[in-house]
Every structure is written in structure tokens, then in C-alpha cells.
Amino acid sequence: MAIRSAIPARTRLGPARGDQSEEGGVGVSSSNRVIWVALLAAVAAVLIAVLYRLREKQEQAEAAVESIDAELDALDPATRAAVVAKLTSEEVEKVRGQRA
Image (cartoon, rainbow, N blue to C red):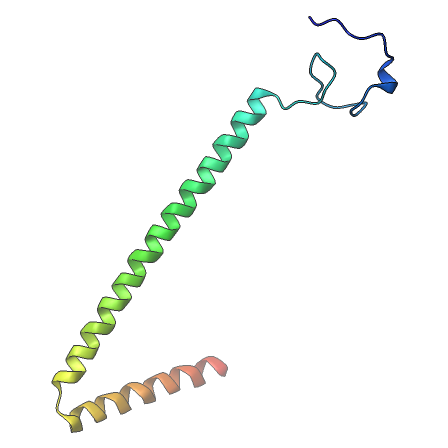
């Protein structure tokens, strides 16, 4: 146990209440610190997992776009125009259906 000064508690620096160490200062208990570190580590792990999944989804979407572009490029111009027109009309109907 540390020797306390002769200065009354009211005149010491720091809050009058709270978690005080033996020296009279405010401190964070080691269990609270461990909990915060564990919580921050868990949040960081979740963020890393989410970013990894988003990157995978983006790569899959890019591969799908490349595949569709390659298939459209392989079509003759008249067929390609018909396919694009059909896809466009389907998307317009979806948008109109969502507004209604």
C-alpha cells in the first residue's frame, strides 16, 4: 500500500468519484482494458471478413460481366440488337413495377 499524502482528498487532482488507483489517480482496470481490446479485435475481424466477402462478390460480378460481353460480341449484329432490346424492355418493366 502506498503512503498517501497529507493533502485532504478534496484538494487532490482528479475526480472525487470513480475508479481510483491506490495513488489517487483515475485508472482503467486491467479487466476493462482486456474487454476493450477483445471487442476491438472482434470488430476488426468482422470488418476484414466483410471486406473479403465484398471483394469476392465484386470479382464474381466482373467475371459475369466479361462473360456476358463475350457472349454478346459473339452474336451477329441483328441478334445482338434484339437481345439488348429485350433485356432493356425487361428492365424497364421491373422499374415500372417497383414504382407502382
